Length: 191
Image (cartoon, rainbow, N blue to C red; front, side, top):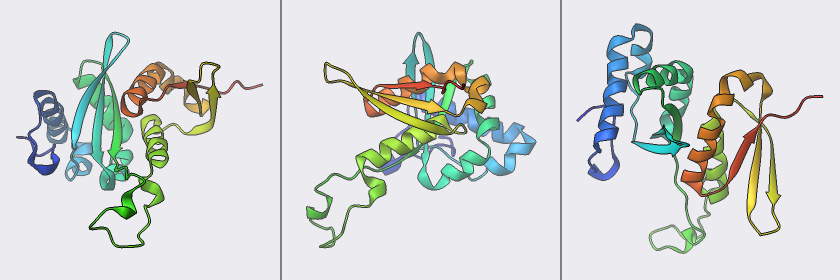
């Protein structure tokens, strides 16, 4: 088992997760400039999502290591996409959602309040930010259709349009898979 994947509660990683962890370990061994940064980093899980006939890879990392992953994000993603046959790769932090009955559960200190960062809304917003990193979100609109369904329109920073435009479908498919919400990524029209 690779040291680059650590599953919680003693779970065993599947074959795909082992493959991704091995690629990260190979990157650490072969790349001189990334060796130091990758030394203390590991993933918790890896999933595949189909995007219009192609596959995308979601890497789940510990929340505490997210900032370290962001420091080498562009190099790591570029190298992993090469190694994984051109599949798009996104890095998302593993976050916890606490239900509304959190303070009523036994074992929780009386009067304790559920942290805002653990609410469903906050976690979904954070997933959206992780998904589009290093691009920034400049606006959001929720469109409520006549049949009652909602569509979230997310406007991304136009300065990154060249780099990110090919990944917009991937972002939408991954967000739909993780949150079951429809989202449409686009760039604001400049006058």
